[in-house]
Amino acid sequence: MKKAARPVIILVFFLTLSFIAALVYRPEIFFRAPKPAEQRQSRIVIPRFETFGQGEAGSEERELAAFEDSMNAKIALNAGELLVSVLTQDFNGDLVDEQIIAYRNLSEPESRIYLGYVVFDRQISGYRRIWDTPTVVTRPGTISLYTQDVTGDRSVCLILTGMNSGEARTMTIFKHSPENEEESPFDKIAEIEIDGSIQIQETDRTQAYRMGLTAGKSFTIAAYGRDPESDNILDQLEIVYSYNTDTNRFEESRFNRIPGSQIEQRRVRELLSGGSQEFENFVSGLWYYVSPQGTLDTRQYIYFDPKNRELIFYSDEVQQVFTWQNSSATRYGIYISSQNISVTTLRRSVDIELESLNSIRVKIFEDVRLKIGVSDSWHGSYRKAEPRRGEDGRGPLSAVAAADASGEDGPGPLVSYLDAAYDGSIGKLVFLKSGEYELHSGNASSRGNYAFFTLDNRIVLELRPGTAAGFSRETYLVEPGSGGSPLPAPWQALTLVRVRLSVQGFQEVHEAAISLSLVES
Image (cartoon, rainbow, N blue to C red; front, side, top):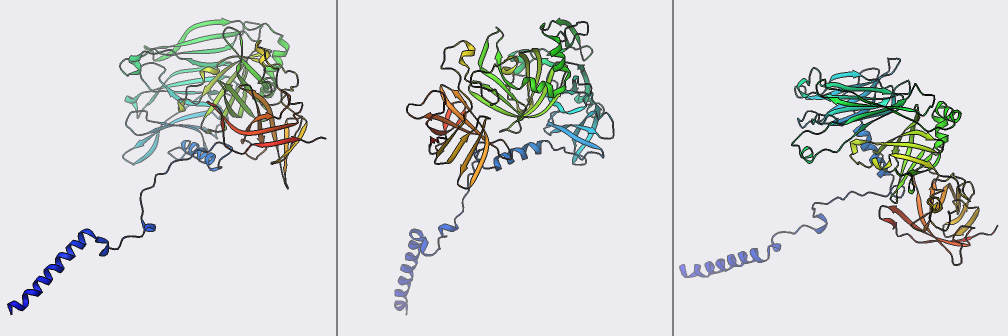
């Protein structure tokens, strides 16, 4: 019996050994592998940033949605209150954001702007308003709300600028008091009103201050207004305010009289008393920067286009286009609120003062919440560009190629507008003397504005289709055909190469070149 069982034991032993070996070296025999289509793994999502005017419309919508979200108050406003602006940041260092809300009370006839302080209450696990104060600002389209350490002692100072119903500029500064968070979280340390302009004069602070080791110098505030004792409209008063640590207030520390240009007074009165529309017509066109030495710099300019509600800033081969949103007349000129057409969260305020009948003084105020710090290069005087041969001053870049304005030798200015029609692969492209173009391709037609200009000794064509949004632009390098004139007279043939303008210069978008031939009338 035992001898009969021995072969069975040996067989079972070998079968078990074979099973173990197969389990180790060939597990797929016993375990079904998942199908490749059913395998799942983590996916890396890279955000895409389309070029404005060329990508999907969703990019602009996302930027706009982000901006609108930053403007949302964390509390519900009371009946009759209308939100104007919101500033969100950590004021007391508790790692939880607080809010400053600027709002109007529609039940008040003067419609003053109020400020409210909104904090997070841990007991109710929600936000509540603990402080309100009225301000002297009444025009919501002119306000700017931000924080800055103007006293130098590392305090959070809340700064509100804007205009009142008397068209005077105002600046109100509140200093945060963490020790009185519930009763009086902010102390008013400055409130200035003047029929001119107000600006904070920043000074350099030490490395120790930037490292958080010591306090720094306090900034001063300069206010410029009309000199009532002078017959010259352009004579100004300069009042400088300095911070007094004993009284915790900004107090007047210096008073100066600044003589204005002696120019024809009747025309000045017409400009300054005609409202914002009159001054808009005056600044319309191209203005070149004037250096402190009095020399004209044609490499930096501002183009004011009130008709199309645009502002164009050009410097260091970088062009920035802003939508002209709001104009407010001031004692010496106009105050403009604008918004970048590509980065909708970038806002820029432009304070323009009349310097003479062909020069203006410009102050630029960026939205300091973005911490870009590029506004100082635009401050200064600007002189109006005179129309040159072949120009009528209506195009956004009609006087860019003005090498002779700086005394340099050059081929002469480029004619901005043509009166010609071209035919090519994209259809029939018609240039009109009015600065408009028409494109007929099959059964479809489109219209818009155009301008020729030069950049880096290259001829550039800019097309602005008349879309509903009005923001799209197309830029092309122009290559005239063989034997073509350096000026469009017009050209017999030309080739358009689609490019993008950036800090690095021209960047091709790798689209097929467009060949066009002149259509004889």
